[in-house]
Image (cartoon, rainbow, N blue to C red):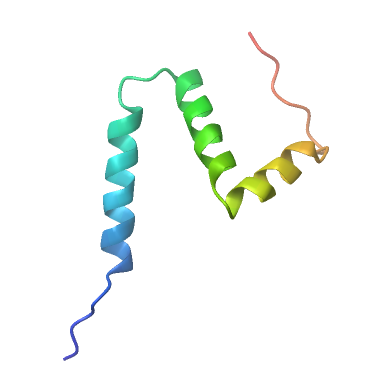
Length: 65
């Protein structure tokens, strides 16, 4: 049997563990800001994220309490 040189599932698990450590102890609002900041800096997701945020949606954003 061939041994894989790259394990995508293992890489995904390691990345998720790293992100969970970074977000630990942050409030939901801080987690949202952290996520938005990291997505906006990504060379692939950043442009998509900025376009999506400018696009009106069918559903209004939830009302703040």
